[in-house]
Length: 130
Image (cartoon, rainbow, N blue to C red; front, side):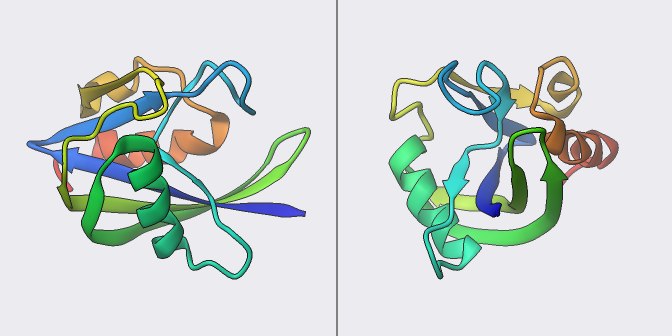
């Protein structure tokens, strides 16, 4: 079974918003682009809006598909739908108590991400701006 996930690359002033996964979660204690699992029959863009409101307290105004990554971990397979979030209402924060921060693109390479996120980090650091 493949777990479908929507994730947001939240960008403001050429900084990227990232969150630290809880140690209890799959791929815990690693940094991530916020988001979460799609509900049954839920479109990834809708899941993104719901998850970013629940996790980060923002209302997505504009998002654009960025990349879809399929990855097999030893214990599960994921299909990650990444979106660039370029316009939103509210100030992103760790609504569930998770550590969060804004980083520059080069700083992304200094953080530890789940293996499935590595191609996104590479794409973001090779691109001068979204």
